[in-house]
Length: 56
Image (cartoon, rainbow, N blue to C red):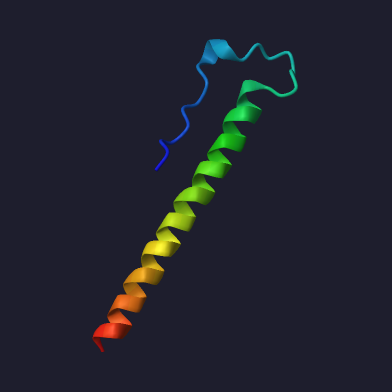
C-alpha cells in the first residue's frame, strides 16, 4: 500500500501559473491514491461478504 501523497511546502509553488504546477502534480497523485484506497476497501468488503455468505 502506498503512502498518502505529501502536499507541497509553501515555498515550492512560485505562483507563476506553471504547467504543471506542483499543486497540479500533488492533486493528481492524491486522486490516484484515493482511487487505490477505494479499490482496496472495496476488495476487502467483497471478500468479507463472500466469507459471511460461506458461513451461512
